[in-house]
Length: 440
Image 1 (cartoon, helix red, strand yellow):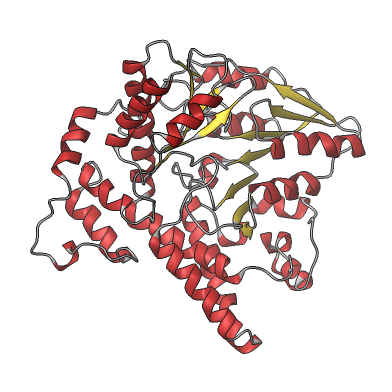
Image 2 (cartoon, one colour):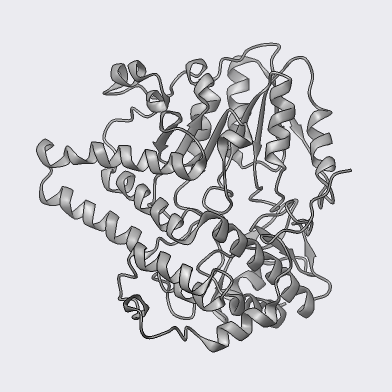
């Protein structure tokens, strides 16, 4: 049986240490010029990176400073990253600035610069995700990206597609809708509700594979349970069997370090508006270079001939008129992540999620988490099931009375979904636990 040892990114945080730093505040040295308080439009990316290097990413005052880069309403504790994240000031200013530029002069001459800005955004995404620019296209969201893959693969009677029953509907129901038309078979795989080892997850999928399995389509981190699949190992096993692997990264893109070439999937999708904290209605589609030729595009528009001649993933992105400001803003969002560090963001997210579960357990011992406590088997999606029949009242009370904005979950994994991210503090995790205890 395979388990993971705790790492710096998953080890239980010392919440007292975090709270001590939080109480101390951002008592930064006054001599360096970059220690001045951020303006309403936030710090520059260079200043952000400098503060990280000066303070260290384990210092709570650094994350207090990161929080100040987001225009969050005072008193709001936003823990809904699985659904929608705010954009930091630098990203907002970039998108707003580009939008104003277009509205001031919508001529072809003025808008010509957005071709280069779009290429810059694609290159930045490739850099962040461990891919080549030719394998990346900017879409509008994960749903569109998922459906591009689902509609692009050639499947028919006798073929089988293996899914995870904890996938998002656009990586589950969409496959079944297409199967009704083309006649292939869909198999949904169930995994243990709270897995203790990687093997429990891996075995569930491997046991479903047959010599007719053509596709494995899974979500790296489930939005309905928070369970995290051992993506690299699962991709390796499936690809050794000649199975196409599609990875829905809606809950991993911008939350955890992603190296797509190392992961070994054939396609990967994500949304900019979730953990990535980027522009709205922007997403990413990655198709491994060797697989690009196998997929048909869902949309064919202006520029199709040139996109095909290029031989890369551009052929999946001829949508016609785009929100050029949003596409350009994706590159700025990557630079924001790089200024903090992808590894540092992942470590922070995991520390917050672990600290949150610990704090809730202290107040409500009867709580049930659908997210595994095993390091590496649970991401930043925390589902807390409290000892009540219906969580609706608690969900409303923690927002209306305590300013905690999460999500209400029903069905197989009921409870309150709480998804902390880099703009949250460890002190807020304690406040969330207090709010739940007062509202339960």
